Length: 66
Image (cartoon, rainbow, N blue to C red; front, side):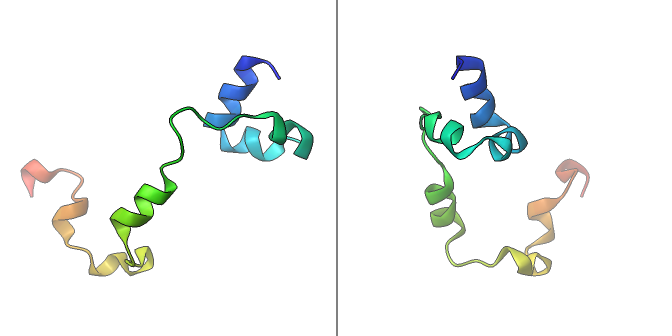
């Protein structure tokens, strides 16, 4: 697989989803690794669906003018 396709598979979810299983198997792991496990630790058991309960300042689009 060409290097450009490997990089695209790392960065383009739609491209990656369109790859055949054999092509997907040829894509090496991203050198930076996956951050999914780290994000799970940061979020912990927090349910993102309950975002209405989050402090409004956390998601302020313009925090300097709140």
